[in-house]
Length: 147
Length: 425
Image (cartoon, rainbow over all chains, first blue to last red; front, side, top):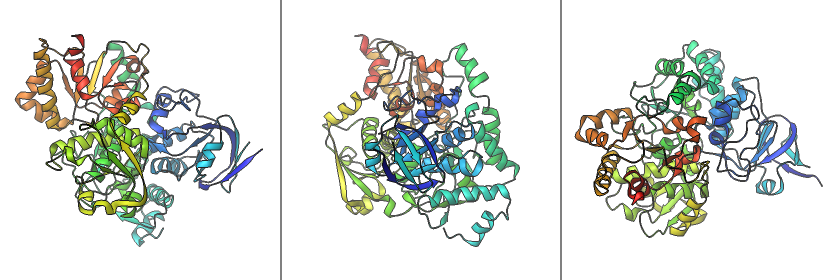
């Protein structure tokens, strides 16, 4: 049975994509750096410390995460990934968005033509419910439907 | 957000489209966190986390070209993170080819951009810009537009300055217009701690292991740490500052800690004490068993876990002058004890270019060189980020380097034993 969660839209938009779930913090630099540096079209996650998503493709997925962690290059990495068309389909944060992720998605929104919808504050239960591979639907009002 | 007439004018495009987009970025960034105003950047200098010119980040340099072509007059100069290349660091011919011909093809272009945007000097590439030898040392209470997780953590926690965990590019945009949004770690409320960490180890914990444990636990929250100050009876001296530099870097990279308070030690904890702890704060106890548990959780991703190390990096974040001297003396003593003259693994110690210069002027420069250790200003993280280096069995006592690369973590004393041949006994 489908379950819905209501969050806050940080970057407006909607979408439908399979979930890729990181229960721990998403380390943006560690996840993206190899893929960006060497042109991996599938953008496989390179963060060895994140067994949930290590070596899994980040593109075309609904990336579900609590927040991002790690280096303050994080926002710049999101911006570059956005400009190169290598961002997830959309992002679902269970917690309020962190400063690095916010900077990245906002810079992509202001400075490029590629926009990735982002919703935050979906709550801890969201990450407890959603599983990698579940189909997610994001509505423009910030509602995420699982299943 | 309520803007001043000057800020509104910039946003409205009176100073050009590019500066308007810079202002729009900062306003949207602040609004995502409920900021009601922009406040002036008060530090003398900024600091940017980006010091590398790689093809994958070409969109970033393209954006900087837009800023430069609009003749934006920067409100402050800035320092930058360590450079990614140093010919003194051991590398194979193939690595040299990959570094220069493939990876860092944008390096020259980017360094030229930095000069034109306002880097303070050709030697000011370090993650530890707050070293005396570098001189980018904010005053307590200064508002900063910095990025570089370890530097932001140090500035907030040890120096009492105020800076959010800004992303690269946001740092430059804040330095360009001279304003940053007022939220998070800039506010009194945002500097309070929802976590209390009780350190109950049997001895002074390894800085980068304790930082890792706390970072993984509290993520981006502010921890108030008890039980650590007893290991620093002389207060916030050079030893304590070096320890906190390393601790903070691990907490910032293994988690997302931008500010921590150490009871009886860091300036705000000394002034405000337990009033910094939020009601209902969670408690995390760190004892010897917890540190061992955390360390055991680190994956070893070497193809052959038993491989002999081919390279060792010490100094991520960059080493202080005192740390360099201490390491030099310990390596010398270890080699003497084991009847060796050179370290057993090719080893690179890293520090700020200004420290390299100063260190090499004195006797320790020669003494370190005699042990076979290379002293460099390089960013080890940048060195490691390519398939050739990734395949190398590299060891380090940096939990930051471990987190972002295939380097394997050992404690400082274990690294010393390996370098000085104790392992072979």
